Structures are given as structure tokens and as C-alpha cells.
Length: 266
Image (cartoon, rainbow, N blue to C red; front, side, top):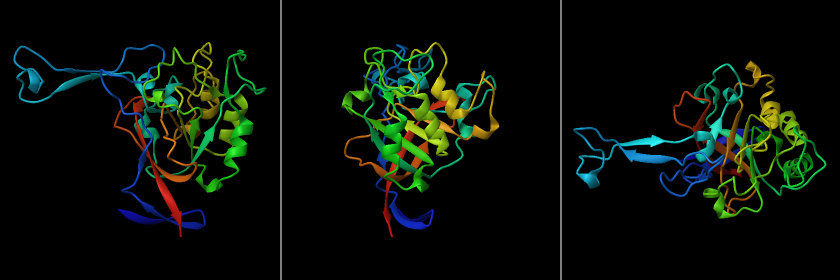
């Protein structure tokens, strides 16, 4: 299916049959990315005294029970309810279906940027300067969602154990800059926008949602963060239309499937 759309003052053609999936498929009981050493995501045939949900074991159909932790087992999208005492769910927070977006590629590095708690010698950051340098190359009408691919972009991101590979994260200045642009949806190929072990500060998360002391902020309710994506090298930096797909989960986070659609200016 093809369509003609208008973003800002420009018109574009988009082919909805040619979307690029930037999620990591969740391979239950097999290799998959993992954060904090949680149990891997599993699928198990349901069984009781009269029924088994596995055709290979004589059952009439396949009928599985799934166990997983969205924040740690793969691509997921989270809302402000990730931080607040008020229980807010991702289904009520994600209000958009087609979102103008910009994909950029960043090399994390040691920096004089700041963070709370204090930076460690081995910390690599997504910095404000790098964000500014990259984003200025693209139309700001596509800043509604920012998609960030980090280098090196090895394919082991689709099953990486982040307890063995320390990931980069956002500096305070970098996240403040993201907020200043009016970004509503932030998508990253790291397990968290914060350092994994940060004494519970979640500094970058709290800057993004403008939350303090776990207090709910109505003005940022529609903002989302998507973590643990994977953007193949064949997808170029640039402006896209994003379809951020989630299941109807009434939870602070849910597995997600972001799709990027290329745009051709008319």
C-alpha cells in the first residue's frame, strides 16, 4: 500500500509494504539479549491432567505459556509509569500510530559531560555534542521520534549479555538536549538510557519524563522510551515514518516492534 503524506510544509510518498523492522525478535528458550541477569524468556507447553498443548507430544494443538521480563529480555517500549508511584500503562501512553522520526548513528565515547552518580573511568557516553552534530543534518520536522544506532553495530546485539558487555548511556547534557528538541519518542539500541548500575538514580529517565521523587507528570505522559532495538547497517541515517507497535498490555512496559518507512519527497 502506498500513500502521500504531508509533514511540515513538504509532501512525501511512502510505501507501507516496505517497512524496516528494527526490533529484536524474541526467541523463546534460545539466544536472546539479557540485562541484569534475569531469567531468559521461556515458552512452555501448557499441561494439566487431561490436556497437553504440544502437537509433538500428542496434543491437539500448540498451546504455550510464556514467561518474560519486558525490560530485560529484548526490545521493549516503556512509559512514565516505569518511574512513578502512580501506575501508568504503556497502552494509554502511546497515543500515536505514525510518527515522523530521525535515525542517527553515534559513537559513544569518554566525555567531560556529566552524570549522577559520578562517571567511572570505563563509562562511554552518548554526548550532547554528538547529538547536535548529527541532528543538525536533518529536518527538525522529523524530531518527534529520535532513533539512535550506536557503533560498533555488531550483530551480537540481538543476543548480547549486558552483564558481560558494559553498555554506553546518556549524559545529563545529552538527555537535556533531547528534551529541549521536543522529542516525544526516543529509541535506542542499548538496554537503558541510564548506566545499568547507577544507585537507583535513573538520571536520564527522570530528565526525559521530568519526574522527581517518583511523582507523576501529566505533561509528559505521552512520551515513551524504546530500548534494545537493533538497526542493521543497511538502513541509512535520515528521516523516516515510524510505526511503533505494542501489544495491548496494561503495564509500564511492553515488548515492541518499531517499523521504519522510507520517505520520498515529492
